Image (cartoon, rainbow, N blue to C red; front, side):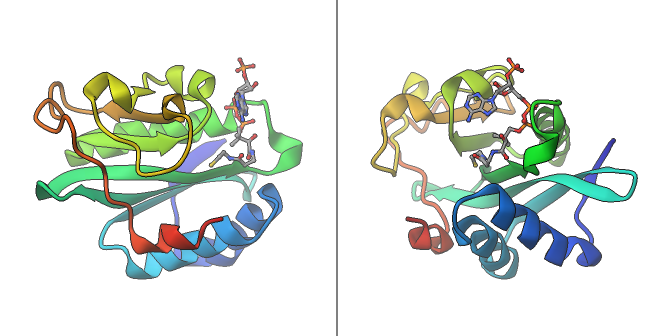
Length: 169
Ligand SMILES: CC(C)(COP(=O)(O)OP(=O)(O)OC[C@H]1O[C@@H](n2cnc3c(N)ncnc32)[C@H](O)[C@@H]1OP(=O)(O)O)[C@@H](O)C(=O)NCCC(=O)NCCS
């Protein structure tokens, strides 16, 4: 299996994969919307024998205090049902961490299962006293600092997500 950046030919395949993985089309539409409208995105696919098994997507988010601070949200990640629990999502996340770090991005935020994301070093944002913009239990909002102490001056701040996320139910 290889993990690589999305190319144009993947776009329809990614839509179908996200549509299959989630109960509604919301996540598939979110990816299309962000790809078009967000100033920074990173889209990776996991592929085996020319079949795309999984997809992960990142988009720019901001702090109002410093709109140029380079940080991203991870959303969504999905793996085709028949290929789950075989390390596909883990491989996507690890490769993305490597690319984002090389690019000089400072942090990744994610809303997800704490036990899953803790494996990759994510911690609850409350550890940095960074607020959650969503109405969820706060342990589900997590982040991974890609540069040591990059977030130390953002206590009390709330990340601002792209408006495409407003359409998510
Ligand atoms: C979540 C998802 C991406 C995981 O993909 P995957 O390729 O099966 O993940 P991996 O094989 O790398 O990792 C599997 C591990 O994660 C755990 N895991 C998977 N989904 C989990 C979840 N929702 N909560 C907690 N743990 C989870 C598994 O139990 C397994 O644990 P183990 O390694 O200790 O055995 C996949 O189940 C999926 O596409 N789900 C539907 C879409 C979704 O909910 N996406 C996440 C929200 S954006």
